[in-house]
Image 1 (tube, rainbow, N blue to C red):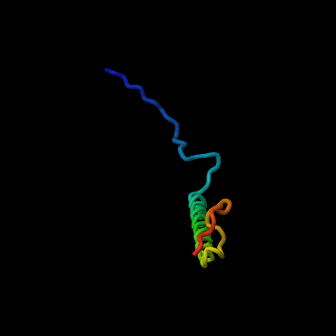
Image 2: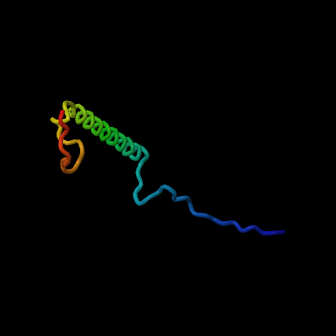
Image 3: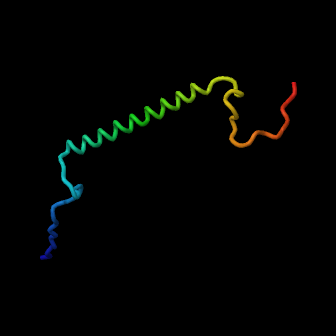
Length: 78
């Protein structure tokens, strides 16, 4: 008869860290992270939309669209 080796393993410590806490604390931190992420995205979009709304009018009133020094080409004469 062949004898099988049986390994005794300790209890799984997967997911256990230095500190232990209840599941509702972890859920609360996850919810807080989601709330902050949504707030960040909303503020970012509102700033973009506000900046786009301010960017109306003739190009001459907005300044140069291209970065860098102005063109050295003479202006077209009509």
